[in-house]
Length: 480
Ligand SMILES: Cc1cc2nc3c(=O)[nH]c(=O)nc-3n(C[C@H](O)[C@H](O)[C@H](O)COP(=O)(O)OP(=O)(O)OC[C@H]3O[C@@H](n4cnc5c(N)ncnc54)[C@H](O)[C@@H]3O)c2cc1C
Image (cartoon, rainbow, N blue to C red; front, side):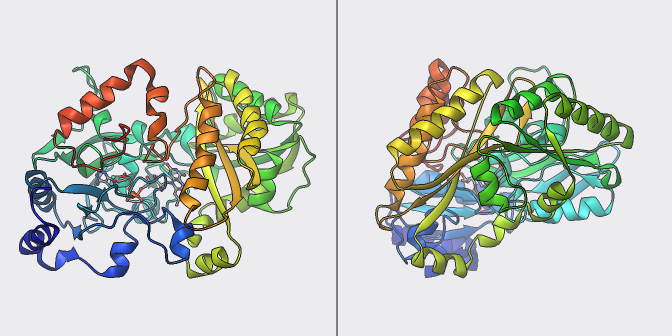
């Protein structure tokens, strides 16, 4: 940093006045969902930013970035604060948080060309509610729907729970506006498709705040058909048979919107005791939607494939329950009762999401179930579910609880579980150790293995877009 922290603060206050926040509670909690366990004990071990700057326009973002770039001040871009994986946690106190959540306007809705253009701080939930009232949807509905905002959703390459029909964020983005670290503003126009070299939109999707600040995004729209939903749950004899049933449905060409397969441990943790699963049995359920004829045909095919898989039909009650409660976890976010619980019962729940081909998913699942508990003795629960299916493979969300021994060493204990899972996943040729939460600082150490011989390009992209390395250092490229 070329100036002192006091000079940096004074310079930013001169430019942005009361949009510069230095209040203790806001500074301590600047990285949101990260380190909730030590935070419950009042421990704030991560480096703290000099201040938070609330940008109100693209011009504000440009001015702030240029100032920080000229003076060597690290910038953590931020919107909804719902990310994990150390994405928002800085590695130095010579940093500011540049928050885009006040940029919360829906700028244009075009129902002829099925596009909506939003500023980065538009809460997805607000957007979806207003679209659904008019019979439309973006189709993007992550579990963090009540928390996440457009900028963060793009920067993490997020995925929604209805992705098998609508696609993930990369399938939904038409164009965007972003600001480079030197303050330059750029726009990628909303062309339906182009064959004009590599697709520049992808430099921003999944950029994790490490390359540029995303200010506006144009997303695709879909008609919303709430009356034609097909919903059905089944018990399958095993996870293996569940994966195979899903593979057959999806590769045959059917696109249910929701595809989920839970093992016993995950089901019991997340659902309680609605259904008594045998030790090897798994709970599988589907939603199909779209125009009535498509939803009906998809539902009929699912019923047929499930029958062939000897799955026992359970009707739609479990799915209805899931549809109502699927975002409830967000109520635990910034919840004093959770802090109280963690202080009394130091058992922490977390997830790690991975993916692979259909061939490799069972070896990965088995490897994690067998080997992770051997490496991590303080595990209390370990299970998993699949929730996003593709033509060429599927994801698994490993869910676990572990007993934290001491809030001070919690980050290391949590990291040990993430490491153990990623190591298992990367043993398989198609194993990918980051499905949709981003690498952050917790998984970036696996980036060289994840990307293999193409990894050097990540470093080159970082160098080209952020030569002074001020943008969220420690994401995308290990140690940078
Ligand atoms: C209960 C819960 C459930 C979740 N479920 C899902 C799920 O189903 N699917 C899923 O994909 N994720 C899920 N997540 C993770 C998280 O919600 C997503 O990663 C989300 O995309 C983060 O958006 P945000 O607005 O909160 O971003 P933030 O947390 O504010 O930021 C996330 C990252 O994006 C960068 N960033 C933020 N804004 C910008 C910007 N304007 N320009 C450039 N970079 C920026 C930040 O630097 C950071 O690296 C869940 C999280 C929680 C807490």
